[in-house]
Length: 200
Image 1 (cartoon, one colour):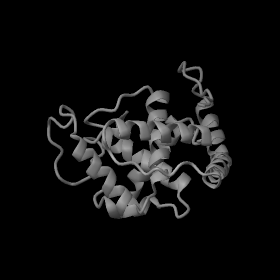
Image 2 (cartoon, one colour; image 1 turned 60 degrees about the vertical axis):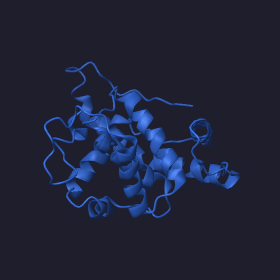
Image 3 (tube, helix red, strand yellow; image 1 turned 30 degrees about the vertical axis):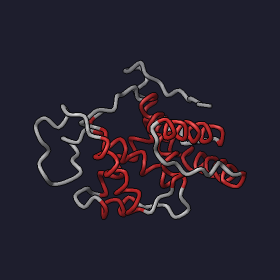
Image 4 (cartoon, one colour; image 1 turned 90 degrees about the vertical axis):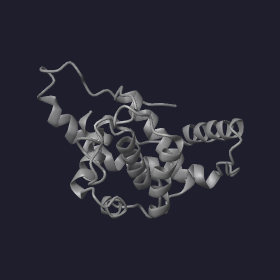
C-alpha cells in the first residue's frame, strides 16, 4: 500500500537510500523511533499496548507485511490512532508534524484516514484484548530478561478502556457509514466488500 511506502511518503527531507527496502531495521533503530514519538508526545504505556493491537489488526485486515520500506509509517499510523483513542490529552496530527519536522499535516491526515479504513474503523479494544496483549508482552519481556512495569490492568483502567472504545466506535460510525456509501457504487466493479470483524 502506497501510503505506508517511505520512498513515496518520506518522513524526512534526507534522501531515502535506493536500498531502503532491502535491510531489516535493527532493534535499536525501531526502539529509537518509537521512543522519540512516545517521549515527545508524552504517551503512556497503555497507549503502547493499544498501538500494538492496532498494528496487528492492520496486518491482519489489510493482509500486508511489515517490511523495511513501510515499518516506520505503519508504526506511526498505529501510534497516531492509539494516542487519539486512548490518551486523555490526545496528540493532534499537527503535533506529530512538529516531532517529525518534514512531514505535512495533509500527509498525517491521509495516513490516519487510510489506516482507519484499512482497520474497517474497528478501533474498539475490549479490556479482555488489552489484558491479553499486556500479559503476552510481560511474558515476552521476562523471557528476554527485559524490564516490564508490573502494573496489572486495574478495574478503573478496564472501565476507561471500554468507555473510550464505545465513544470512539460512536464517533467513527458516521465516517464508516459515509465510506461505505462512497464505495457502494464500486461494488459491481470490484469483488471486495466491507465486512465487519470483531476480534476477541
